[in-house]
Amino acid sequence: MSILKTAISIAMTVLLAQTVLANDSLRTVQLSGNALVLGKGGEVGIFKDDLSDHDTFDIGEMMFAPANLFQPWQKERFRFGFSQLSYWLRLDLTDTTDRKLILEIANPYLSEVRFYQVHDGEVLDTVTVGSDHPFDGRKHWNLRDTIRIGAGDTVHCFINIPYNRSLTDFNLFLSDAQARIKTDRTERLILIVFFCLIIVYLLMLGLAINLTRFRYYWFYFGYVLLVSGYIFADIGLGYQTLWPNWPYVQQISLPIFANAYLIAGAMFVMAHFHTRRTYPIHHVALRVAAFVAGAMIPVALFLPLLPPFAAHLFSYFHSVMYIVTVLLFFWLAGTAFFRNDRMFPGWLMVGFLIHGFNVIYASLENFKLVPPLSLQTALAENDLLITFHTPLVLMAGLLVEMAIVLAIGMKRFKNMLAERQRMSRELVEQRKKTSTPSASAWRRSSAASHRNCTTGWAAALRQQNSSWKE
Image (tube, rainbow, N blue to C red; front, side):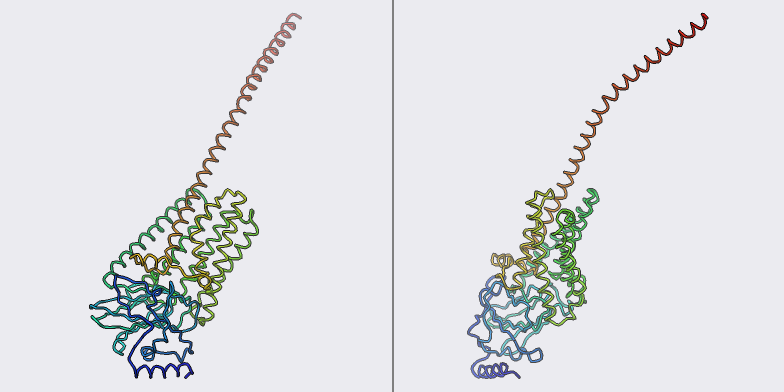
């Protein structure tokens, strides 16, 4: 046993001699409203278990841990980055009436999460969920634990994240069970509207492509389809509805969707601006980015088999690829804008601005270079609880981008029709101008032919008369 573990065990023994489960640094929480976003208020304590994988603490030891072992968390979101440590979270709950609460983590992609409930020194309930475990038995895409509190009781909630192959980043919500049912309906309604808009848009876009003959827009069709698949998987709907018994699919779904839609987006941009002919340097850079993204897809197929440090390395590189590709797009669109390109580079930059900014900022968050931001937290503070793991800004940005790209396509088609009409009018005018001289020339030619014929007949008659006279 390590020195740290021995020291903590001694501290636990001393603590037991004084009081059970005393905690001076963490305040006991009583949910006053319907929901609470945990974190900024310091209600949750954090402990980093830096022991080896075979020598980590268990709930039997952590439930008697000293108060100063858990450091109050006071940030916007729980963001531990690409860490190989085991994390323990502690939250003490109480209420004056019998109540049923829901404690949930808004990140269904976490490999494993263990929920524990402790009351009077006894473990009441244990729940283990995560992308390494089948979805069976769960009712929601988020990682949840249901807590029942009796009037005047105090329940100590522990959350253990023993390992994670992806980014350990999540929001933690506490809500009343009855109120959460209404919130579930609201969330499902938002998702239904969002994906219905996607489906209708894809149908319209497919019809428009067939009508306008802008074949390269099929790249954008695939891009929207793949981004929608990414959002579907990132929220946890794919695991809930399509592959609930296949944890392996859940673990590889996000990197596959992400790299695939990056390739489709790069191909659309290259085709839209004709980069091979007009922007050769940008063309090569985007081709390299698409090639690297394509090479990462087969690696992603074996991601669950890799050790955590290798999976973290993959995620780091993937974040860098995201940043580079977005910057390449803005470089190309900016160059086209200053060259007065007729392919609407300004509007394309505006359309992709929200989505691109969200991608860059989220990637920089992964490297802990910028403070974490969460629109969901701001909405929850105003009594609108939305617990999607996918940022709402990303979803809204995709809808804005879709509308602008479709408008650009229709504008291009309208300009193409106007150009064809102008060319048709010019052709008609040209034919009119060329047809008038031809008619007059024909009349002059006919008159000359008539004169020639008359002269010829007269000469023939004169010759005949002279022969008769002879």
